[in-house]
Image 1: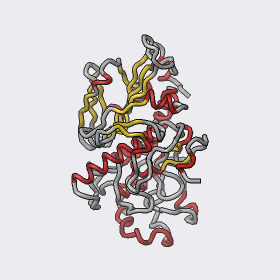
Image 2 (image 1 turned 180 degrees about the vertical axis):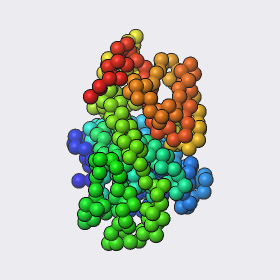
Image 3 (image 1 turned 30 degrees about the horizontal axis):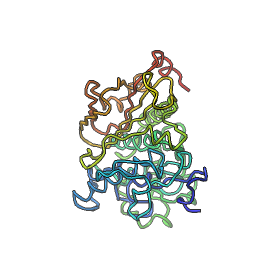
Length: 373
């Protein structure tokens, strides 16, 4: 049964649309093709994907695809696309003409950025980003990609080791590669990068691309960086679990509550601003799902430079940083600021993800800032 025929069955299907938009290209295309997270238009890697106008357009198209995915890949979710047109998910198309949105319910989509097939997420990022990028920046991009999956509506799926920067030394098909390439190190001493060129059968054609990367020590993360990636991943799961607004179960709830604010022809490239509304104490236009938060706002930033976005729609919300981020004070989160009086979002270099909230409960910081799980 094809993906499009799954609509209305209540059965989840894997969302290759959000995977390809986040990473760029497809697992079956040129491994250097870039996407939203890996530097398309913003940090070219030298592989020609079109001129500046064309790559900016492709990035805007990928942004639309991701936003539909964040909204549960619903076929009837209406998004203001990069052209300025209001389009249903089923009217937004992939590059081969297939509809991006095809589900009738968020429970029918499994969002993911990597799986057991093809390269690991860390390896995808290491292939597609410019070779001059620092390992710190690659770690941030890894977190950005995982965060878009974790904070999307629907069912999030993570490949074993995404959270610890797992590498198979660029092996694109490790089914017969044994423990040497499939190793998962839960001592966190290594992520298994650079243990050799992956087996000839599935990888020989890409060896010239792989070799200079695998032998470059700057591509290999330290134990501290692996542990930081794990901690950041746990934090983003805590944030997902902190509010039912991140886990809506019906199409009507998603369509009514989930909104995107950096859209249309004037959108800032590489930034997604998503809000999810709950009923306010003084208004009852929708049912209340969360006793603590009346609104959550998430900013996904792939820009390598500072950007500033004004969001007038959010100016009336009394926003503050998510308690998990306040407690842990992670540097990734400090790279983004909200100027609350004007609802201006200022994103610095590779912010990854920032979550701010309109809070209704005064005891929330204590409860979330402690042992939330």
